[in-house]
Length: 289
Ligand SMILES: O=C(O)CCC(=O)C(=O)O
Image (tube, rainbow, N blue to C red; front, side):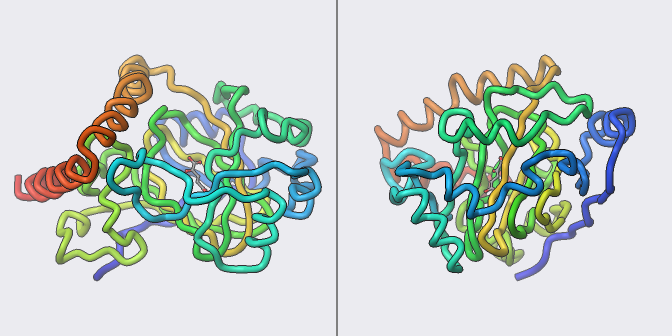
């Protein structure tokens, strides 16, 4: 067992557009901005009670942090629950169950009145603000977003820890082919360097997010997240302007994820096992070279 080499993510109180572009966006370097939401109504309004007051009867899919098996799709909910009841659950304490990619404009559009898109030099895609919920014991498996967007991630109500790895660390992370996550048997909180020797080489970034704080996660960055108590987040995304990245995004979204689901349907667990063996072989080879 061991610990990753992690640097603390730079933290600023506020930032100008010029500073953000020059020192973080252009360098594709993460930064945590404490006061980016200071002029948002959300900063004072958004908490679990408020979301609960808007929940009505809506039912939400819930995810845990276990890998999906056999012929299941790569991300499948483990159960469904009324949002109101789910929020009661995360208020009460530890649970693995998370809400993932809750489409704010479709499911709770009234929340769009409570925030504005920061004028920071990113061209945000305004149709897709998404929300995430969890509690102590909720873990988000290490992954990067397949649309390779630059992400501005905001946290509310409580606290969570975020570990990031830049795309150049992918070669050491035992990435699974045709997927955007790594080997799910790896405990990212307590990596086993004997079993997975390439992980010793991994370097990353770490921070803890509090209510109202914003974290810039550059395009293609891996994120591993642990909720430290009942809380929720929102991600705003800006698609890449770089042609090469745009092509990769298209491949991921238009081909890869469908191919993966077809292969799972056809070959089930055999396909998953085959890809895991390949990930181990390829990654271990990369440290020998
Ligand atoms: O914090 C979470 O629950 C997941 C966040 C995430 O994966 C994202 O913003 O892309």
